[in-house]
Amino acid sequence: MQGFTESLVLGAGGLNIGDMIIQLVFFLILLALLGKFAWGPLMNMMKEREDYVANEINTAEKSREEAQLMQREASEELKKTRQDAQKIIEDARKTAGQQERDIIESARAESERMKESARQEIEQEKEKAVQVLKDQVASMSVMIASKVIEKELSEKDQEKLIHQYIDEAGEER
Image 1 (tube, rainbow, N blue to C red):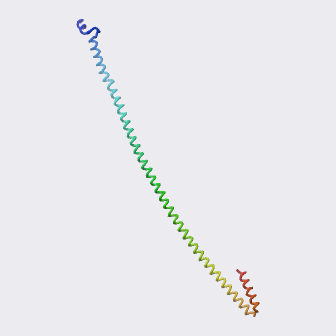
Image 2 (image 1 turned 180 degrees about the vertical axis):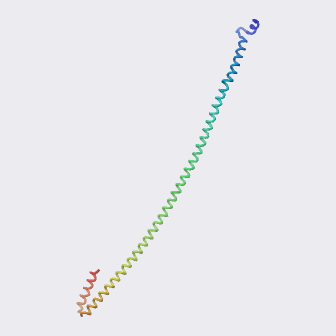
Image 3 (image 1 turned 90 degrees about the vertical axis):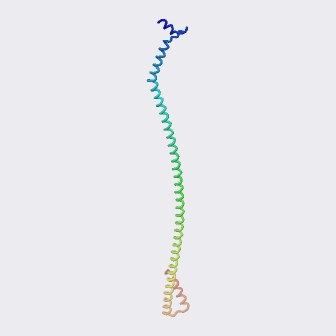
C-alpha cells in the first residue's frame, strides 16, 4: 500500500490526491445540502421579494392612475360647477332686469292711476264748489228778492244789503 500512497502523492509540494478526492466529495455533499436546505429557501425568498416589489410597483402605478383619474374628474366637476355658477349668475341678472322693468312699469301705472284719481277728485271738488256757489247765489238772490219785496229800498240800501249778504255768505263757508 505504500506504493499506492506514494503514487497518489504528486510532486514535491506534497499534494495528496486522496485528500483532494475526499475534499471534493465533502464539497459535493455540502453543495447538495446547501442546494436542498439553503439554496431553495433562498431562491423562494428572492422570488417572494421580487413578487412583493412587483406587486408594490403595480399598486403604486394603479394608485397613480386612480389619482390622475380622480384629478381629471375633480377638474371636470369644478369646470361644470363654474359653468353652473355662471349660468345662475346670468339667470339672476336676467331675473333682476325683468323685475326692474316690472317695478318701473308698475310704478308708472300706479302714477298714472294716482294722477287720474287726483284729476277726478279735483273735478269732483270743483263741481261741488260750483254747486255750492250756485246754491249760495240762488239763496242770496231769493233772500235779496224777498227783502226787496218786503220793503222798497233805496239804491244805497240795496247796495248795503247786497254787501251785507255777501259778507254773511263768505262767513258761512
